[in-house]
Image (cartoon, rainbow, N blue to C red; front, side, top):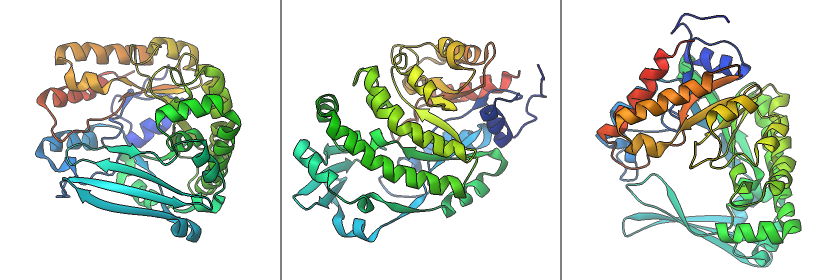
Length: 385
């Protein structure tokens, strides 16, 4: 084994070597959304949780001591038809921000409602766009042009120039099942996906056509980069049986994976929760990487098992639960990090990136949380190969 001098690689070099399955000086470490999302700590908006002073040390730690992966969606210019048929109204009520979306079809008006609260960085869907099969059939009558937006890649290039050799830029997109399932409540989605499979296939096909066109254009103009594709967990247990993962994910996300790879890109699938029943299907699609590899009880496979059975073909990202970072005693958490590093790098494998499953979404970062993030960095930087 070739051993590099510890610290001799830049973040960009370390991440790209990991994706290619090459030797690195130490495991890469990444904080996922922290250092990934576009965050403006100086924005005084009451809806910007990151302007609280408690966030500053954590944001600084990510920027200075981790292998950065900027998660970016290109700015998209909507079609004239989309602007005509889609409407979004934004308003304030009781201190929260609401978003009312309306789509006009030939038969009816479809509506959804979402809420954003000031102290939590998440959006709650109060009303989903599609409530039943009648809504679904009406939605399917919309021309594809309504869903198409033309990507503008200037933001990718600017982000890549800004991050420099500290890391890379990752294209962040949903897959067809993510776009389809999120139109419904989870209850209605699972019922329709199980009992109205012909209709659901039609919905997946509609979104797939749009995504394939998008991926082709972005991959041509921005080749050889890492992509994160989200949404496959919608078709995993406990929501759907593994056989439907083959139908709803492999058949539609699989071609998306191949478009990216055709232009030298790398595909990382994001899938929370249980993996055992879907790992053969993920391997079948030829993906390059997988996250967040949640340990039991959130997941159903240990990292060492995933590494042993699939680590030759996939780079493994993750294995640290955000709930552990926020709540676990620092001494106990240090043992968790050491185990992840050991299991993620033992034996042969394409590569491993130590990473949390998510990031805090509240306004205050506690001392315990900060200490545990510092432990992640400290132990990874000591783990030279």
